[in-house]
Length: 92
Image (cartoon, rainbow, N blue to C red; front, side, top):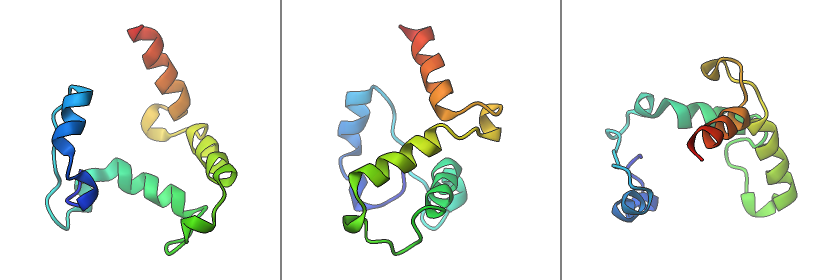
């Protein structure tokens, strides 16, 4: 997590998820590569400064579906959706 106010309840998140929480060092975006990469992908659809109050839920869902079905090199050219559901099958 970064040091934004949105993570002030990190102890609750950790307890609910049964996970430890970690914070990046201030001004160190390389420590959270996945989210920085995802932000770049989202910026292909919504430029910085976009007012998301003006974006419909359907449009957001469409972008979400595109990104979740987009093959990623870091996942061996699988999609995030494929990896997620493979993980669910192995753990259920």
